[in-house]
Image 1 (cartoon, chains in turn cyan, brown):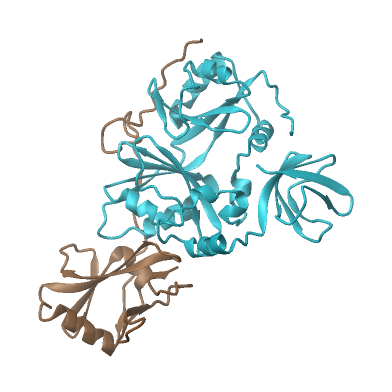
Image 2 (cartoon, chains in turn green, purple):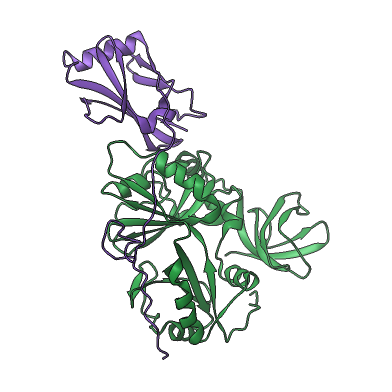
Length: 298
Length: 144
């Protein structure tokens, strides 16, 4: 097991920026459902659904978190992909459908609060998180809180207006939370298998990033569905994301293993990170004939 | 347990911005920016079929061709014979008395299309050739 580098006694927080799109109107769910890989036709109020947008070749072009809040859809995506995704959403609006699309970039931020211990997170928030589900936003003191299901640690995401963020930070810092830097956040997400822009923006197929569960092949056509269905029926996924570790340094980049297959390191802390490798590789492989890396499933 | 100060996010506030409303919080609405003048062509077989379908209701009905997101390639064609929309957001072309309506929002996606009709038992029906499409689905209903 890869060891965390941050102090386990601390409760940390990290501020993440997303693209923010709000869609409202009675046809908003139908409209968005035609574009994404998962099926949100039955989405409930305050429910949070993960989904993907793919191109016609089946490759991921954006990773979304879609929430239904009071009849509107809040769509959080990758910040760098905001323009392209919104263009797709806007240009595909049917003239006869009731859909209004709003740009909320910069208006909302997500604060992720995480710790090794569940009680620490509860203390920081002043509310018990052990009873929370991980699919629905909880309204607590007018805040929106979503518990994130992780492999090792405990995390909640707080949805907050940008202009209220200072007040919120003062509160959680007063309760003992510490702002973490990007390196600590990367350690946390690599330990817990949290994918980020570095993975989503590399043109991988959903299955290659282990995201099959947010691809619904029975919902009908969406961009990329034909490719996904073919891969599923023929079972020919050739590579998959793995967590790696090594005794030496392995930076982000593309390498060749001793078997001649590509190893694409997408995130790296130096001696650990994520890499997309051939499914034919063993759990231990060599790069450049010398660097031994071991891998494990996320 | 330490005290947690109430933070008002305001997502459920009333007003026309439901999610982000309240506290003077408003968001810009995004609309289709590019509107081009639409010119389409219709083959003889397609025109014949359009006339057969409308059958003397040319004064009240029209063919609306539109595009929407979805399908394997990104967008789906949609064609409807319907009562003429009253909205002024449509561009209208007339073919021997039959009017074809295309909404301004779809103008950049549908400008230049050729509407054809194939009278065959398999794979027959209306068919659109779109010069704006870099790819199309095998079924002919989706383009991107």
